[in-house]
Amino acid sequence: MSARPPRVGALSIVESARVTGGLRFVELSCYEALSLAATAADGDDAPLAVFLAAAGLAHAWRAEQLAGLLPLSVGLPGAAELTRAPSPAAAEALSLLAAAAPAELAAVALGALYPALAAAYELRSARAAPAADGPLLRVWRRVSADLAAVSGEGTSVLATDRAGALAARLDALLEGGRALLRGWTEEDGA
Image 1 (spheres, rainbow, N blue to C red):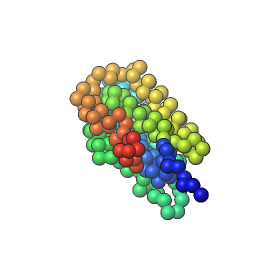
Image 2 (image 1 turned 180 degrees about the vertical axis):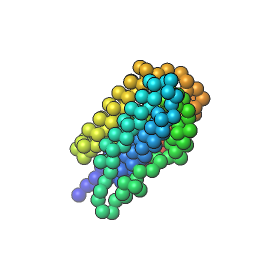
Image 3 (image 1 turned 60 degrees about the vertical axis):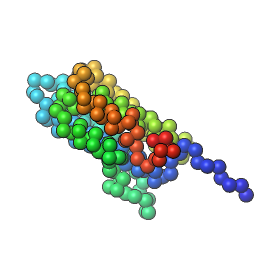
Image 4 (image 1 turned 45 degrees about the horizontal axis):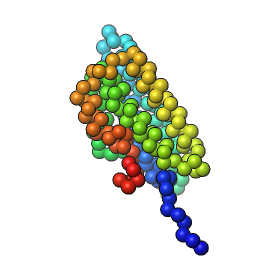
C-alpha cells in the first residue's frame, strides 16, 4: 500500500472554518463601522450617507452568507469561537477604520479595505478543492461579486482621494488581503 500524496492547496475543515470565521468577523466589523458612520454622516452629504448605509447592509449580508459555511459538527469549533479577528494587523486596521470620520471611512473602504477583502476572497477561492468545496466556492463567488458591486457603486458616487495616510496604513496592515486570512502558515502562501 503506497502512502497518500501530500495535500496540495486544499484546507482542512478546521483551517477553512478559521479563515471563514475571520472573514465573517471582518464583514461584521465593517457592518458596524459603516452603519454607525452612516448615521453620523452630515445631512448635506446624502450620497455619502446612502453609500455607507447600503455598504453596511452589504457587509451584514456577506457575514450571513459566511456564517452558513461554518461547521456545525460536534467536536469542531463553533461559530462564536471562529468569528474573531483573523490577525492582530486586521484587528488594528478595523479599529482604525471604525475611528475614521464618515467621508474618510468611505474613501478608505473603497481605496484600501475593499481591494484587500477582494484579494482575500480570491486567495481563499484559489485554495478550494472543487470536489469537496463546491458549496463554499459558490458562496465565495456570490460574496466576491457583491463586494465588487458595492465597490463599483461607491466609486461612481464618491471621491476616493480623501483617504491619504489612513489608506496607506491600512494597505500596510492588510498586506494585500493576507492579514484577513487566518489558519494558514507562511508555507501555505498566506
